[in-house]
Length: 258
Ligand code: ADP
Image (cartoon, rainbow, N blue to C red; front, side):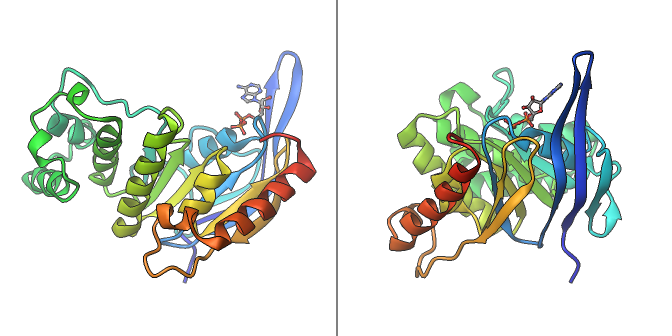
């Protein structure tokens, strides 16, 4: 089976009046459908640059980016996002926030409206459908933002530090919750994070990048022998520390901090 996303020898440099900054060097990896992959690397190494290329906001200098075997051109409708901030609008109800993407795309059919209600019900937000976002907890807001994204049926979910605005306790709960929702949805996800614990608790594979210009240093497959394989249960499993230390060491060979 073809991978959902393939990156082949991707290079990218920024050009400014001060000169050239090489951000990505020969990046090659692929994502299988349904896989949850995390990308970790020292800060400033090129993680956001990588997401901007996959998103189609910028074009690689050289190399190939393929989604379902075709060159990524305008794939925006096939790619969904979860960002650090949920970007829910206070002047819209939760339901109207959830359908906003479809409304903008001009795809807000009665079927989509029904699906929006189904998803709100499935993820415990049904009674908040008419509430304002400010009436929701941080975790509920992230759920609403994810439902808004899932409603557009993206093939690939890009998660850019989606929990980093939350305090530590909330962050653990929300990443557990959102991680499980994404798993159940069967979506392919690419998470960029500086939080190694988050990467180990959520993903099937971790791609370790070097300091700038980012190269792929190693790809570590992650698997836990757990009956109920959830992010929170992973954090308490003995393998967790082993993975954490292994990846931490690899990162520190390249840079002192991440
Ligand atoms: P990360 O997300 O890993 O922190 P970025 O992808 O944001 O890293 O940036 C990688 C490097 O590219 C940075 O070290 C920075 O020097 C450079 N860079 C990022 N954006 C720009 C820009 N708009 N112009 C010039 N250089 C940039």
